[in-house]
Image (cartoon, rainbow, N blue to C red):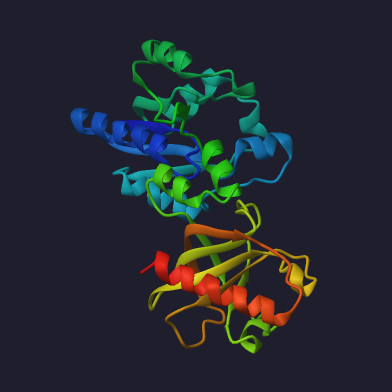
Length: 293
């Protein structure tokens, strides 16, 4: 492998702070004639160490796609396992960054940690760079309203329904992905045919409620009203994504779709009658038309 500039981090969401790190790696690589790459993990270290489920903003496939959009040439997703969890920081640098990826320079954020118990940080990378002969660049964070833009901040925004702000700080659309399955046919009986898919395991669950969204398929992009939640009016308990496409007629069963959340309209609620529900859905659809005009 030719000399590389390695951007380090988990990069969940690939938000504007991550983008600064990735763009810095590309800039350094161009100056030195090295190859800009990312070395990251396929699974979230925190989830492995705590044995708690992940709440990820992006799938691995989309994370890689967003990383490559910044000019990174190769993305290496290593497994975070028991061996990796106890690897001393210097071993990680010597055996993996240098031994496997021929590191000529590294780029990371201020809060980046690595190695057993997270004992490695930007300062240690600088010291090890002097020892092993590579450059180390630590990027300042991107700040929004006095707070550092982070994956945790983005998760909190999405979990509270503030998807418009989350999208601005991500620097790209926030997507839900799924395969359309057959539902109970309730929406069609109410005059609003809907598609359904279940939320992916390990992915962040947005605030339950109704959103304006763009639905993307292989055949086009459509304005869509979606409900995320358990549909309490019908006594259900399993969270699903239920969507009504405004400008579409056809069959999407078994199709893979993406929903880009644009704006949160209202929380999920229980209705006392079918007429009350239909009236509210009608208002929701009109609001979506206004937002996505």
